[in-house]
Image (cartoon, rainbow, N blue to C red; front, side, top):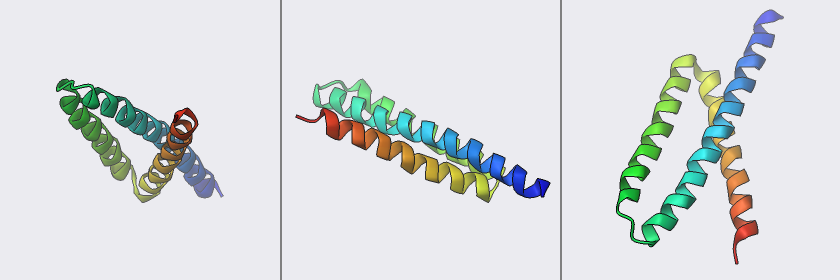
Amino acid sequence: MSGSVEALGVATVFALAGGFAGWLHFRGLRLLVERLLAGDPAAVVLHVARFAGLGLFLYFCARAGSLALLSAAAGLMAGRAIEARRARREAP
């Protein structure tokens, strides 16, 4: 019984962390694309940093185990959906 409770806790924590990471990643994407369109060349470096940060997050999730990685990936997609819904609301 305690093993399944522990697994549920791990899944919840990593899903929430993945949701935050996904929201941050896709929110950053939107802001950086706006900077790129405005002609800011420093935005390219920030894009690389954004990808590196997400890769590092997923690496640590993978080190924590398959359940942690799958939960974080599901959270990432939830964060993406949240940011996509926000972008559609703000679109002209």
